[in-house]
Amino acid sequence: MQTAKIHPTAIIDPSAQLDSSVEVGAYSIIGPDVKIDAGTRISSHVSINGCTTIGKNNQIFQFSSLGEVPQDKKYKDEPTLLEIGDNNTIREFCTFNRGTIQDKGTTKIGNGNWIMAYVHIAHDCQVGNNTIFANNSSLAGHVDVYDYAILGGFTLIHQFCKIGSHVITAVGSVVFKDIPTYVTAAGYDAKPHGINAEGLKRRGFSAESILQIKRAYKTLYRKGLSLDEAKTELLAMHSETPEIALLTDFLNASTRGIIR
Image 1 (spheres, helix red, strand yellow):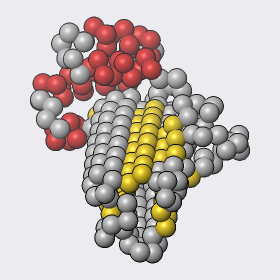
Image 2 (tube, one colour):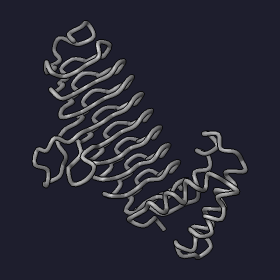
Image 3 (cartoon, one colour):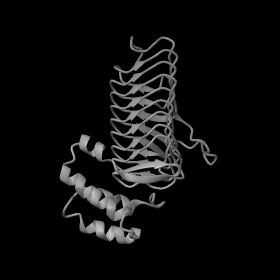
C-alpha cells in the first residue's frame, strides 16, 4: 500500500484497503474500514472514516470529510455505511455522512457526479448518477436525488424530500416538498417554473419529446386538476411519449407531496 503515490505525511490505517494506483495527498487521514478503488485521487487534508467504500477514478479535493458519523441524536455508533461510486468529482470542504439504522443504513452517491465546494450530504441520502451540486447546496437526511438533477448554489433540501430526474433549482432555493421529474424550481419555499428544457436539449431529448413533456407539465400544474386527476391524464400519455413514464413513476413514489 505504501507507494510513491501516498504522501509521507498522510496517515493511513494499516487495515484500510487502497488500490495500488490510489493517490493520497499530504496530511490526509484514512481510517481502518475504508476501501478505495483504482485511479481515485485524494488531495491534502482529506479525512475519510467509518465504513466507507469509494469506487474508481474519483477526485476528492482538500479539506473534505467523508464517512463521519451522522448528525443524528439517535445514532449510537452502529456500523452504518457510506458508498461512493465511480468518476465523481468532490470539491473542497464537502461533508458526506454515513447512514442510520432508522433508514437504509447507507448513504449512497452514484457515478459521474460533479459536487462543488461546501456541499453537505446528510445521513441516508441516495444520490443518483450525473448530478451537479453547486457550491453550498445541502441535503438534510433521507433525501433522494435522481439522475441528472442540478442543484443551484445554496439550494437547501428538507429531510425526506425527493428530487426528480432532470430537475434544476435556482440559486438559493429552499425545498420542503418533492420536485417532480423535469421541473425547474425556484424560491423560498420553492415553486415550479416550467420544465428544464435547456437541460433536456443538452441530453439529447428530441423536440417532440420536449413538447410532450411541456404538455405533461401543463396537465400537472396549469389545468387546475387535483394531483390524482393529473396522474390519470398523464397515464394516458405514456403511449405517446415514454419519457412521461419517468414523471408518473416519480409522482407515484412521492410521499411528501410535490411543490405547487
